[in-house]
Image (cartoon, one colour):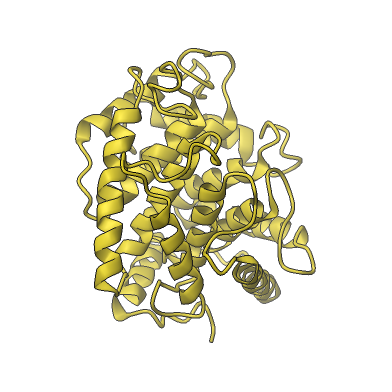
Length: 354
């Protein structure tokens, strides 16, 4: 079965068609630029399928991936990448894998709302945020009533936990504000914001105050050059990766027009658009371009299509013969990030749609 065939439902096909249509409209009804060759597109599709198959085969029968580090975050990121192919928990070639991942994430929900285990998940807010994002993308197409109720319950409590874990400055740290002495930093903040926006889009109540405080946190960390610094407590130089992630999160929140966004966009474009050697990624290439690709995609096809061709060809050239990609943290993490980038155009993940 072709993973790009919309086997899940008519609604899922509509979502994809709408996403692609929005890209065309963004050019003012001009023909979309033809950048990639047929050979390029074939190689992207082949690489994507190989990566998806590797993720599916490397998943344990209990739904997680044996990564040792960040088990909740890895399962959520891998599950999100599989959902990006068009499968759901009940339909498609990766349905069983997504279903097992969802069940694993549900099993990690604690009574206080945290999705994760502080004993095994260092910096557990990462896993919590990515888990909210994954489950929120699953919820809309969940066909089993019992699991749907479970996901709604888990996400409702998870949203409450995130609100309680937010720092006085409006951000989040590696752990909750109480446990982390109210410390916050940019990358975990973005993970929470995207997770919360995914929940809100899926119909889970999220108070506007939490999102507004997070947006003000991001604005408060902006430097004169338009970039975002590491933390409200440790300002210092701007970080391209965090700035790209912050922009992606602001776009998710519907913020395209604030006074800060244009300058942030110009900063990230200057620092990251040249894929060259990734000198400005602070060693976190996959994290950086996971978010920057979302930012460029939202600009419309006139910018996205030529840049996408460079990005995708570079990604394909780095794939191992077995289908995975290597890099920082773990191959599951790197593979999930790259697959998410490769599948942005498919339009199956609501959080990333234009």
